[in-house]
Length: 531
Ligand SMILES: [Zn+2]
Image (cartoon, rainbow, N blue to C red):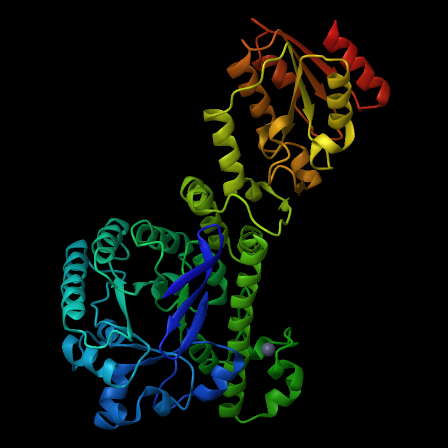
């Protein structure tokens, strides 16, 4: 029913089969109003959205029996899968709805929704913990009843996880909901967090739920329709989004960009090449009747959302989702805080993040935020917990070089082959401002074999190279008779003063050779190693 094809961080590309056809995820379902919509649903589907979301409660109230006769697809005039909400949103906004959980579930089945949602009781910001817990329990009761009373197995049913803004309640709700057999799970009440730019809290909520939800099932984020949060949410394992944002923003003439929104009257250019923006210029748009302008802004917003989803999918294919998150982190300070939170979650991310991928794309380390990647955590953990050096008399520590793998290029390769030719028992370990230390025998494995870093990181701003060398020497000093640390400031600006200060030459003869590495220097180093 849901097949996962590719992974990056906790994100994935998958295929969800529905009665009406396959949905490739991550996917965003624009929310359409069955009664009137600023952009007709068929035109929205035409933009390339594989799923639409509409509200079964509104259909029930406006169309009743007729809705069931026509079916939701004919009502909307579309031939793509349709997901229906059940009035939970109305319950959240107005405090009550004029239906029952049983009635609205049956109605979703009757109108032929491809994905239906039980009538949950959303938790919202500002409610007490007791009230939130009561709503979580009520949602769980309704979830159990819905599974027992559903009649159509060909409509996927969504089990919503409530409890936000209390992460422990979200965890509790997710754990309980996960024990119930829903085809799709959803994370609730995040729209408020997003409107208030509380991205770090959004990370907490999604992670709290994802820790417990079955990894093989798709997860929907209710109301997650701002382009800025799409890469973040996908990186945490969200597969489906719904959003009315394209229309809500258009109502206020807010023009979406990949990193935020701009008020239409403040636009001096149209920084977009979607069909709307390439067909019109700003002066045309300014002359238009307000209703037509709203329609075109909504359509533009849809193209921006579609493009962001496609960009995220391409990033997953390339394994560059982290790089996309770094770009988005530049758009808002809270987005950077959210990225830092992912850095703190490296252990969790590492469990999901694929070890190898095909085809291989090299990793780019640009700034200190790149050092929070799960690959870095994975390597450091391995070196600290499971690494045993081979037998050797001399430890030779060299700065990392631009070319990778080190064993095939540059000074490491030359020293390695010279040492082998002479039968020297020399162990080469490369130090890196990114990975700390990389024993040469591991350096041909991805991603150690293929990465590049900025000049800025060569200065070892986080002192990872320094710490790597110091810790390695401390951990393995009994193994070698002597250690030689070669310093080449052009390659890695290792703080020699700090190194000598931190490494007590007990049990180990330590020599530091400072040099840009010429052939003569390499000879010199080899001679030093063999005498
Ligand atoms: Zn546009």
